[in-house]
Image (cartoon, rainbow, N blue to C red; front, side, top):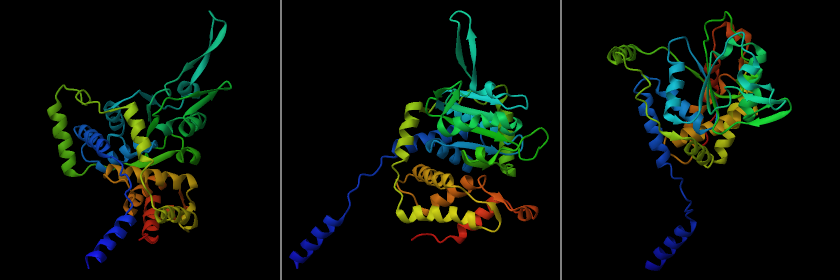
Length: 337
């Protein structure tokens, strides 16, 4: 009997896969510290804060959409204060030119040569306020830099320092003096985060905090948590999060369903599949797991897809939104077991 038990134990031990687990403890400590700093000013909006952190870890850009006064700009500024990296803010206006963002070549009289003067895009965290107020040619100036982290001017390519993250804001209500973002640019944002009005208890807390501030500045007490090197290290760590084959197929089925859905005029591209993959790894990491679950994919799918699809005109007239359709698609696709 002892021999049988010994044999079973040996077989079991041989079949166990002793893989090295990722050490996510330092990352979780930093994530919780950043959350704590942001929540000293930002009331509620926990999902938005999680999505911003996932975007940083996944090396993706974010589009914040909401009516004026819901803390879009202040959130981006607060986030920049917690990170020890370069920060640049660009206010988009109808008269803004591409050279105002990227930079331009200026003739140096001393050297009798043209010198390139870098624009405000040459930083690590870029806040673009009211991105839909600039005309198409200025918005198009962001295509290369957001996708390839470089710009090309006068035949010369200039690489940007990593990490490089764009947080853009836009007002979905006001249409006067605005320009619709082209699909090619929207596709370059990892997430579109829609920010709603606060609830009553949150509104009361906002007013109370503002009253207690008196003459103090909101941002002055915010601590710096992460350095550029730590961010790059965590971005590399996130890529090692495990994803089972059946979950890869689950992502593909969700995206393919957006192309076959009768309520959608335009479905999501393969870039969306990759974005869901990367974002789901980020959600797994901030939840302390080194493997992705279906819940992580569900969490990532709506903010990744809602700006990459176009609702059919007749459904749009009925008031149906892209996020509602995506949620229906997610519910319809069978969860892998």
